[in-house]
Image (cartoon, rainbow, N blue to C red; front, side, top):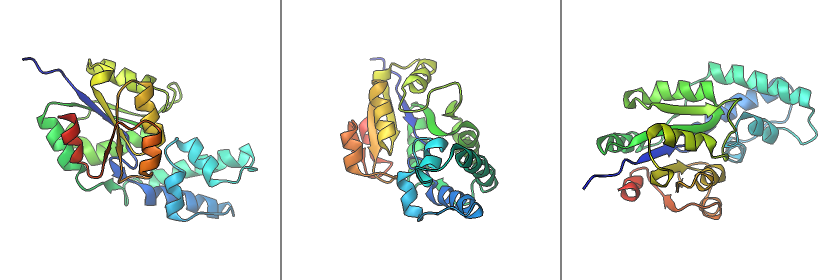
Amino acid sequence: MIMKQKAVIFDLDGTLIDSLEDIAVCMNQVLKELNLPYHKIEDYKYFVGGGISVLVDNALNKETSQEIKDEVTARFKVVYDQKLHKKTLPYEGIYELLDELKKLDFKIGILSNKPHEFTLAYTKNLFSKYDIKEVHGQKEEVPKKPDPIAAINIAKRFKVACEDVYFVGDTMVDMQTAKNAKMNAIGVLWGFRDEEELLSNGADFLVKHPLDILKIVN
């Protein structure tokens, strides 16, 4: 019996890596520099997931001008680039999970709404030993999640049917991406959002520890 090739596509922040403190500290630094109100680290759990423009919108008051938003965005990119990798690390169990998926010959991809250059930098710094071929962050020419096109394109390059792809993430954006791409949605409970959000947005499975994913994909 020939085994069908399968694949796993991971979100990055809140799924593979715990990046909340670095994101919060960098954004708060920018807000303080501009004499704008700043936020508790925990608040950023609900600010992230939609890309840098959504992060900036959530961190600022609704009445904030586009000029200020653009200034915050530009400054955040500079500050965040300087602090890359400081406290951001993979969650416990992620390396063990990736080791097992490699042994099982799964194709592995990463799809994030984090700017593409930062997504590449974190992958190179933290996951280089896994030789992950498909790594994609937010790019101007590609619609961001939950649009399914980037996920579908990864599946095509893997030569794996969407129904044989597991999409793993921690927010409603990830679950919606999986559903829109007709992939299997795995919601992780160690990330930035809760069980209710994941289930109400289409999670087929919920996991409390990275190695629980192996029981699902096997």
